[in-house]
Length: 395
Image (cartoon, rainbow, N blue to C red; front, side):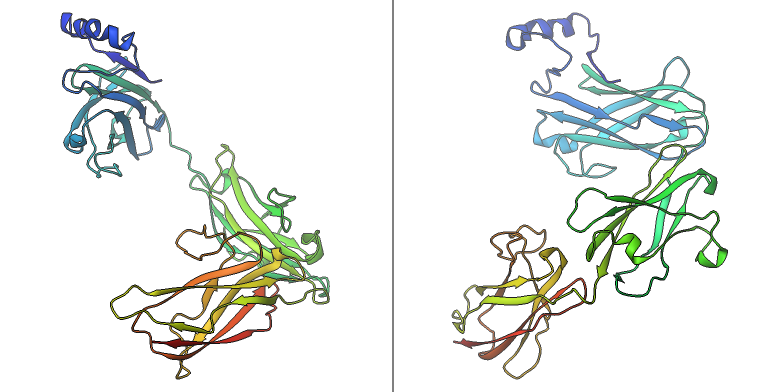
């Protein structure tokens, strides 16, 4: 529960409210106006709802404000942690200086961190933060007897990169280790959501087990296994299948998931990608010394006869006039519409089959003939025929 109120300052507090009434229309709980900061407002308060008597952890208290001046980075908001209906009090200080849990200094978001050492006995505690001694914002923390339940953790995922659908029907295995801080008896289930090629919702659920599995099939004491044959998994035929691994305990806690991709391959059906429509200049002139680098957009169309969902990557290698390979090899090309984080591909339309990249030629680049070799491959490890292009760099 969160509560914002005007503290009882006698006639002074009520006088401020009356003076501002024509402006505000009301002295409601969402207005935090003080003589020191007439435009300040408390926006929200956030703190852990529940802590446990037998689990020591660090609690982050966050208070969002608006209307404070930029100098708020040096402002200290006082707070208290009080036992409701009992004895106990802890003084708190909230800061906006980029430390002690705060991320951006001076942005009006105040934080502090404190441990749960106060939570010795069960009960309800109240967090109270004040602004200029006139207004308070409150939240509560419930102290529960016992230890906190932590979710199970997945690790050491082992899944095949590829499956050959035309191979003899033999068993294949996926493994994942699961550790629950409360013990193995708290693990309720370990599953994998299977996504068929091109689907964004799961199409099947794989159940991983330990019970009834021969010990020699389990790599470790925390391992769970799923046993299958390629045709059992690849119900949709050839393509890239994604498996999202999840685990849940008996308290309903779900651990962070892991994701793997397995490619189902049909040797008879798969064809390699095809490159075409290369656009790269035959000759370029370097800018004079002292100028910015010359930027060149390079594009090529890559088509997979088995469908674009099976396309894995497109790239080129370049070679200097003396035959030495570039230190930047291989240079990846993207069909991302120029939207991939950390990449400036220069690509125009995402998913249209045209892959792009931007290369830079600074004025000190040696002149001569540069060889470019363009390649593409698919998830079946089939590689396209390469396209070779010679570009001459002149001064």
